[in-house]
Image (cartoon, rainbow, N blue to C red; front, side, top):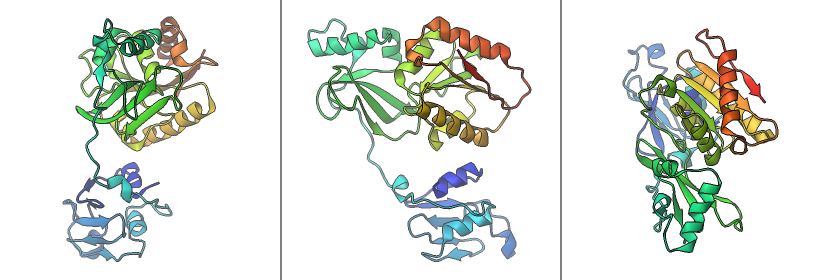
Length: 317
């Protein structure tokens, strides 16, 4: 686990400065006879592990385990630190493929390939309303050629996109660019209806849209992987949603990833709420009917007794 991940999991606030440096409130100031630091005066170089506090003058030289000493000062004793300088490196802004074209507008396009991509989405159950809402498009040239493109945004900023081959001939089937800071389908401001305060998380984009169609008054997102990243877990716990339902894939990686994500969410969750885990034996989520999905969710809701704390309920049909 990296140093910044351990800071986040321990509840310690930190700030990015010039990469690869970060700043946080120094845990050593009071022990050294200075006022408690509330102004992020401890600066740390994540590459060299040099550290210096401009309040109490505590410092660590390069190569002297500065990161471990800071963790120890914060009470995280015995933890190892993985390299992470590349995580904070400056990155070029991500953009969609140059020939990206929205699919909701190509139903009657004369280009056969565009119509093929459109029909592929329809065959997977995606409707035009979803194509428009999620800005689903297609690329026919370049690294993401002949793939349906699903943009992933965070606060109106493109952070990633994944492309799914619609020809049935390309390997790998998916092509992904960017970092998993957010979810496909994420909304910072849900509809002003109490039923939308539940967030449904699936592994893939088609599973998330199947949930969206079945549970019309809820928000469904795709994690683009079997487990959440720390950035995604922090986003889930940011206060937009009161309850979370994780819909697991019925395979080993899906179940293991769901358990890892659960443990991360339980550490970061700042208040009372509900967390459910649901899945199906043998059938992926996008291959069951909307009625089955609704029945599973209704059964979970009825079986749960509220007590303002986390409760895990495995509901398998």
